[in-house]
Length: 467
View 1 (cartoon, rainbow, N blue to C red):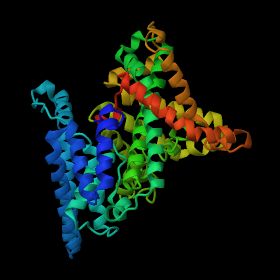
View 2 (tube, rainbow, N blue to C red):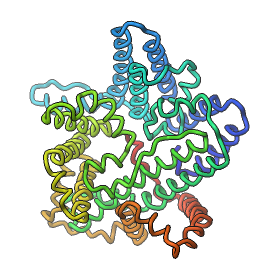
View 3 (cartoon, one colour):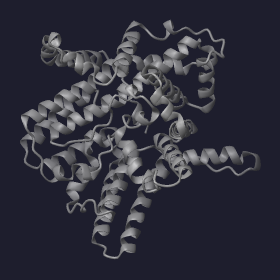
View 4 (cartoon, helix red, strand yellow):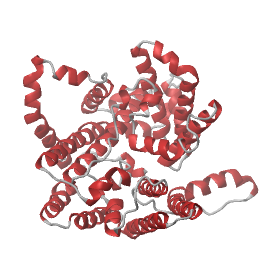
């Protein structure tokens, strides 16, 4: 079940909210509702989710109670190790086996590739557990004394499947006591509808064209078609994930929680360094706080800083998926960040803003080719076509209709406008009537259009379910 589905919007959410607002046992209602939500798609993994909650609760309690530093450290590393073991088994066992077989094929060292079903949201659940244990070890937070409350935190359905990665420390007070006001519920509804419109009206509209273009052999595509496919996927992944994050944050407001922001107009960034301060903020800040800084961050020698950056982004790529394309995507971004630190960043500060913005956007979009391609060979072939090194003749008109091109144009325009441009424009006196009317008309209209699109059973994928 995804947020942008008829089942969620018309059945699950109304029933859940009615029980949540009417009954006094809000944590219990949220836990049971979250388990029902998760079981809708993956009933077999509900015990695994609860086992994860129980183990992290137990290790957190043990860390908080231990007095000897070495004992506390031992419990922390055992807890982290169990979290990572589950992630490695479910997400990477097949990848490691396949990679080993490709290396050992010449001397008969093959191993059987296990058929393992990936549990939904396991990457997010794992990182939540690790951050909880480390924060207790650092004495940043006390351990949660109630298993019910901790299980509710781990299973909370708005962020369970695809984030944002909500650390326990960020909502610890609200887990115990939260205020649910009409004003906050309305704020949540507005943010949810914004995310739904981003997902349904923009991301879904360009998704089919992106999938069609990337399904064709790269050497059969014309250069223009390849560029349109790359642009469609760039728009899709932004509005798909940012839209889902906005829906999650909106739902959290309706429940009385404050989730951290996860996107801040990343395609308006003026460097790759700035891009990663705006894209998937909860993930990039997690890697910063729990890996990059403990490794020494930028406090050590320059070569060590560059190594730390490269390692973090290789692991960031691998976190997104068990494939060499994701590893290379991480290498691509890590290399660009290192190059900007070495000296490119200072050069970018002296160049015109349009040039810097174009560099950033192109670097990000070329990286998405690695992210989207099924194999390294396909990614390399696609990039050759983008650079005009292919004689393919497949034209985009057969793959992307007028509605796709309108969604692509609107999505790109809204994404790349300079920061504050819309706010400054709408604050002008001449636009006051437009701003007032938009509050009354725009949101209901967008919601109605989303419902019409969903009722028509249009293409409705979700990228981050893969991770």
